[in-house]
Image 1: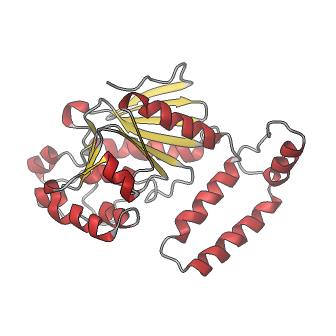
Image 2 (image 1 turned 60 degrees about the vertical axis):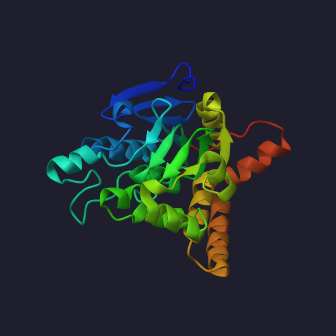
Length: 275
């Protein structure tokens, strides 16, 4: 059963393969093809790109939550039936076609949470590996199906090596459908940040998203960028780069506003958009 939907959405739109709602500065995105395991179709590339573009362009939007429709599958990756039909890949055939599913690959500046409501497999791991925070239902499971359907495990799998022990990421990659992580094990290894009952999944994700949205939008975006940029860099170099960004932020109105609001015991009035 799907967790309760947010009440009184400010905006809602149905795009092919997605249901999108905006509530309290949060963009809620449901992958909406439950009849085919919420798999990814070529027809979903353009809507996915539009979703990320809207998230970054709309100053009223501060956080996104990505989940799946139904309670069986979060996302099972590429629709293999399309590949079997004409050999075309949902992620794009040309070398210069961007990976649209990943907020990291698309350069999204705002936080993206992943609420895993069932099986996350293959290309569905883009959303998991590249999310800022991952929440999973107790019955969720994670596996990589690429080699089992004759494909190379690559981009998503590299992402997994940043969130899992290398051996576990390698085992998922090489065993394919022969190995899966349940939610509890994924949490123990660090792939998942919180495990909750299925009925509480969407509510929990939205609570976390609203908590993030209450903070300084500019400070949140810069802090997120510092941490992602630190991956793969020597610690001292990453800390020096982060310190420079922190110092530059001292000139932003939110820097003084946060201190004044705290001192005056009131809610801060953050600057929306670039000052």
